[in-house]
Length: 562
Image (cartoon, rainbow, N blue to C red):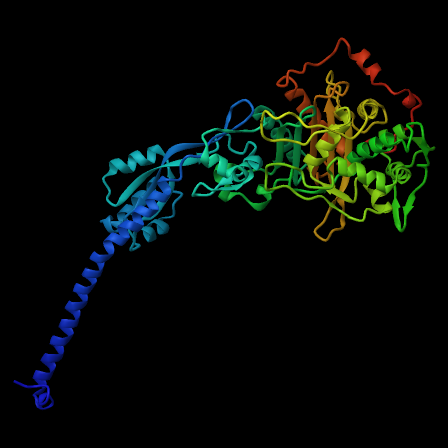
């Protein structure tokens, strides 16, 4: 035998044989070591597999979200998650092809890769339909398994999507009501009941979408509000998205313009400016202001589309939507008094809503004289549509401010007096005159028999640099009905509508031409749902009660389409 000491003297054949034996030993040892380590890993792989399975199976127990009429808006339903155990898959390529044929939305390469992984648990389809489950279950293919889970389903698709929000794959609330009430939804079987009426919500969304398409506009928003208790019956933002496919929605679709966007509202703010002026006692309805020439605030020129031929009183200024007149009224009232009213109307703080997506108003904290004058006609205080709606609702609701609410509860409605009843009654007449007077800009909102009263708005959109876009309007209308006894308020905003000369024979894209007609259609369609019937027999009598004698001597309209 050749010992280690004299092995160097051994023949070459002996040396070669020994090296081969050593290599063989290492190879066999490696094989056994691999098998042994695999055996040892089985409990850990199985534990990991069970852990992932339990995470899916335990994502249950989330309460429903329903509308005010108990219609289901969000619900958990039994479903299956499909997963693979690649070690059990005998023919990965054939299995991948079979699954791809059954689920064409799943990429074949994706399936091949998944089935080739060295894992015990690979998710193939988070939520599998009963048909797929039955087909695969009966196919006899190996390595494909199912877990019974609870899937979050939104039966009405994009209806109220910006309010509902959505949940993650693990059932965690990510946005909207789903996020705000995440703990309550997971810990209780009691549904979260919204103030939203699904029928009204559908009409609001449909009419806004229709007008956006007609005017080739960029976006829009709308609110339907119960004036007397603050309940939001409809809240729309467009473009919208199907909540069931939240992951496929773009940022533009997800953005909630009704609560999270801040706009310079333009002439709709003249309602608020007029109410403040009259209620403060600083201005009388008959007081006249020189609207025959431009007004300068420092270097800033305040202009009207056309100048009135003579000084106008407060009513005429509102009816004719005069920027110059509104600024002069605000100057007489004073910045301090105006800001105090804005605070009371909660226009200078975030709306109190159970949503994460609520914006802060944008304004100059110092609130100078120039800020006050520009705010009088809707520039310099950017607020959300829901804030505009609740502020104007206060004006019509005997002067009582009520916070907007999205959740049905048994709590007593809390009211805060801002304006006197006298001011409120006078503002109702003025708002009706905006719709019915020959010089009024809101004529296209007049739904016959329902006594709509409100105000149009046309503001230049703000660009990314903070400047105004000269040919890009925010067209809006805010109004209530029936204005002689206000019950409900509607706000509609359309972003950047384009002129439709061929369709309409004019180029106007103002609030009176774009947003007011939408409100008219919404009123006609939601009034029967709200049990409000058109009044025809008493129409002259009611119109007479809303008439303002001070407007009998007509001032020709300067800009009817504002």
